Image (cartoon, rainbow, N blue to C red; front, side, top):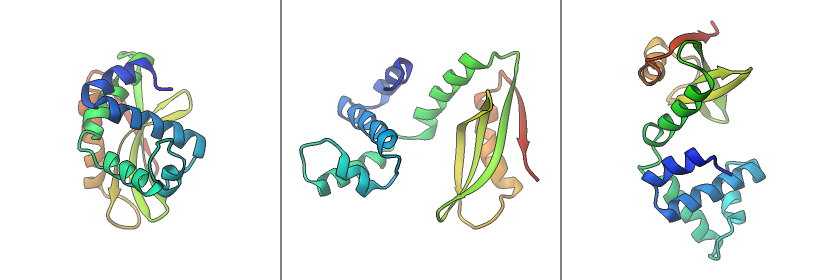
Length: 156
């Protein structure tokens, strides 16, 4: 389900129980194709009441160890480095999207006509991003991939 290098990295930061919960949630998200905690709790295969499963998921998602910087950056760096050699250009797309009531500014690596999310922030307003918000998203990426030649693309 999760590649071995994901599991090796995650084992450094998560307990065995937390790692199992993460694997179950990834499996549920793939099968249920929904991000509603109530729906995930209803289908989470744990022998406890649904309300307890919901609280279990909420506590898990609030873990400080589930940080983008701690968990996601090393994984995405490994993925990108394996697929895009340092001599080649790393194309990063900067885009804003609205998802329900959330306004998200996201930077993604473009690889074989696919976007791989690297970093994102929730904007506390409706509408377009400004230069400061774009810099907040791009600085960690530039630091993370300082050995690559980065090309940033965006609309407008």
